[in-house]
Length: 206
Image (cartoon, rainbow, N blue to C red; front, side, top):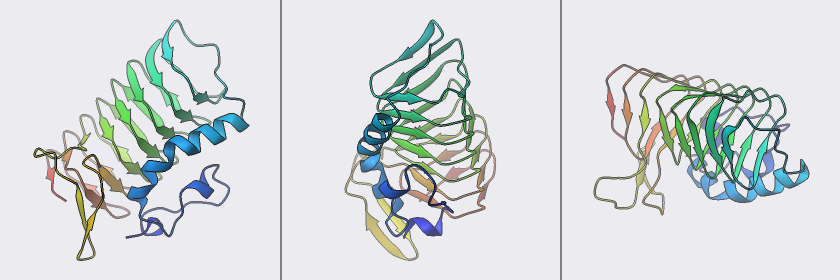
């Protein structure tokens, strides 16, 4: 299981060097902290003038073009790229990269995750310890669960292989242009190839 199976990424992407396309993309998650720290430092660790109701922690970069709501919480490390839209009551909770033109909607929570370009996480979604490919869209109420009920190590099944992830918190790898309909639960360790479609109300097993 390697990242290029799931994502088309241009070498011009700011974070390209940190996340090798020939690596298991699940292992990218451990590099988010370092990648954000380095790139934020290059950009001056910029924070704009925030709306009064927006709490923004340390080590957060927010591009000047990002649309911010009256109320939200962004705890660093976090990098919010050009053209992104953050809606009211979003909670971006450490070690998060939000790519160009992404949407993080009302009452959504992101934690230890990467959103590539043009991802839509628009309504009441939870994204934990996951990588979402370009143009992925989550319907309202989609949950990317990241912790097994028994709290044991998450194991990924891909191409007939059983891949221990070495952690007990790991969500999903979702390939480019995938659609997940409303009120779907994606179980820990789920792998979805490019152009996947998951129907409403599904409980997706790994």
